[in-house]
Length: 402
Image (tube, rainbow, N blue to C red):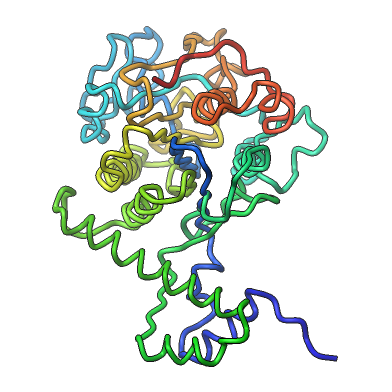
């Protein structure tokens, strides 16, 4: 009996013929984009490892903060004033012009419904699934961005992109999306491309797959070269996250509307004041690369950077912080009403803490994502609270978007 050939299998077979591996195919990676009739753009960045929101957006106006973080504060430069109560970690100083322009904001004291076990894997699964522990199928495999796409008319595979080498569960599901990774090295000469077209002329499944892979590789080279050539970013060489941002911006300037990728390295159990500034620098360069690459489209863009949970209020004995509960998220883009730290501050006295160790969450991080979807794409509150984020109470509109 002949073996059934899938789209991926066909691409693997053809890649072998032209001397490249199956792993080189952009169709087999974890970058996802989606295209749709809307004009608004959305970029979701998963900050894997539990970002310490108390060090990123420092509540220096809270009388208990300095005592809880005495060692960490001693090892770092003073923060940058934001609103008289919060200060920004100095490693994010390149983003201060965005803050002053009203295109950068933060939310403090947020979390998913995940509590107590503090597992990165479970926390990230729940963050990307968009469900809560009160929902029986909180381990479902589809993500909240994909469920949003399923409710919208006119969605095509190019509407949304999952980008990078990490698995982007937030975009997994029944709605069509595309995937791309910067590790997808696919170089085919014009002669080889003509040969492939001849060989598979009567096999449209493989012909279209190969064409798509080659075109995505060419787009990566174009967008990365443009970003470096603009000389707008320091160093003259793209870091991996800037390369993801460059490709993302290139797709969003054209037919795509939604993209998701992740940035790793936020787990700071020890030597936090050495590790965290490096990761924050990568985040800052990523946001600036998005702004530069998007050009005028930046004005219609919302960037949501979210993490699975926060970290403990008190530093540990290794110069770091342990897994916590309440944390922070970052908002950026020309569509965002920035220059503000959103959220209700719970305080850092011992009796105000969650389990006397963590920042007490005062809002659900999913609610801010839901209001972004509502404002950008007109998704109804009913759909958001039942289909996209099952079990969510969005609360009052925080006014994130212009």
